[in-house]
Length: 363
Image 1: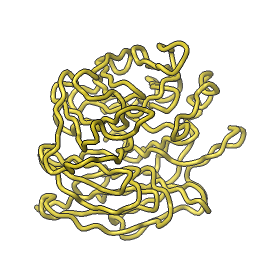
Image 2: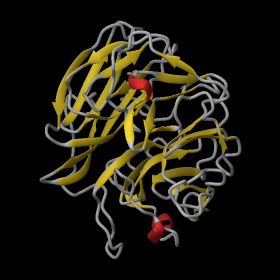
Image 3: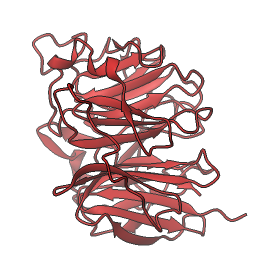
Image 4: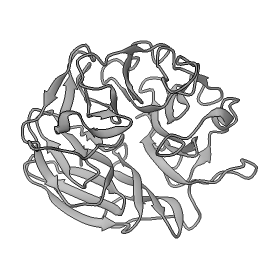
């Protein structure tokens, strides 16, 4: 049976959908859906008979919402009432949905949303409506979580694949937090992550974590791209060790784990927080196949001249095919794809609005 590859591209001015029916050799791009809205989060939920697309959209006129499609983007449903909303008495209102994450396979109707300001919401109807996970919002640390350059938001939600009571979240700023009791209590998990911009460079919390990914084989192995720092944890986030050696810089935004193969991860280094250009002005994805002990630059098919666009935290992803596809989009509206796990690349689209997020899957 021939599978179709679907690549959802969220941009500052809408959602674009790219499809390929020839094993990702060529792509057809449609859109924009939700024209003139910022699409900061997209998910492809394959736990049901018909895949469901979810999009976190932010309209400058109507505000933030979550839309769903059960026909691969041919039509979209958006509730009349905001599906994600802060409850009365929370003292805050929703600015945008930064992350949409399907729950574990044995909870097919559970979907999580990470928001700005930093809060976690949970849906039990497949992403149609959400309720706040109140204990995280009520955490005594929350009033000391500050805003990063892009806002103060939960941008990473990682349910544990074998234990539904375990969930890890990460935010800028605030750091990594984990629950082991289905959200009833939360504890910071930042030991070993440096926050060079704080008076105490090794605080319990307050780190500006940019993205966290979970290993495909060992769920206790995690990888983090920090605000200056690249880390690995082998104990579920209890402690972290630097794996930045071998990279041209320890600053960047994305961190992506291979969907099937353990110890294989991808990132896109930038020079520094004050110089957000690719290192040496070269377009390079870096891959490690030994959990960050060593790194290799991947450049075949990527631009060779001076290159300046950055790749944001959710603008890199993998699909679930074998061999795995790897994708990234840039702030200048280019989207690149690799059908051989990063060994070679081709251009999917150019001249799009700035790419905020990408998600891919076989459908």
